[in-house]
Image: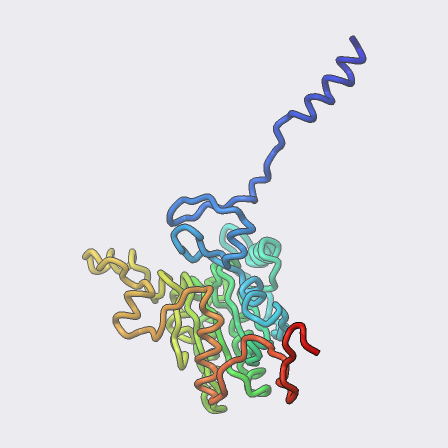
Length: 304
């Protein structure tokens, strides 16, 4: 009995025991509640396959899908002073930064890259809402300036993907000063005759909307993205009136002339290339490689 109890029974139990499923294999859509397999969701660029709701996507994943072959070169961003105000609320500011860096794997809330999209060279900037709400601090200001300078040197258009809750309160007035700094950076592009295209993603609010996010030559937004300075709840509490349905969403702003386009994330790549090539007077993009034509007539099967 010892042999059966000690060997056979555990062996049988191991074969038929219920295996634990990792919790991160499925993601619940916040809009329709559908459970989505993580690989299927990633292949669809974090867009719900059931209701088309656009979920958050990191700048690195966005750039991997955007650039040809997923290949891009990161542009170095100057490091600002770590904790200029020695700010502390429930946590010290450096501790919050370390936690955000560990959670996202990024240095700060903005990633700058250069590469080609359908053989169209660009410089791109992506904002990460997962990093302290994508808040605009000195690093973000440095990133926009570095991106603009790089675009001017390479004579490439700049494409910026915004996603932010506004200025970073832990840096106080130094954070607010990034608004005029980023405006100067955009002016550098305009003086160089280079296109500046902004893609507003959910959410883009506060001082970001009041500065570089609304200064593009072409303003594009993802579907149902919240785009505003003050949020709808703050406005309702201030004016004590019910706001219209879809107020401050991308489609509402498009209807009222604040946006040029509302584009699905999966169609964004083609849309950006088409606009950039029109603005820079280039021929349409080539989406596939074809063999060069030959002078010899093609041979028919079975003939020599």
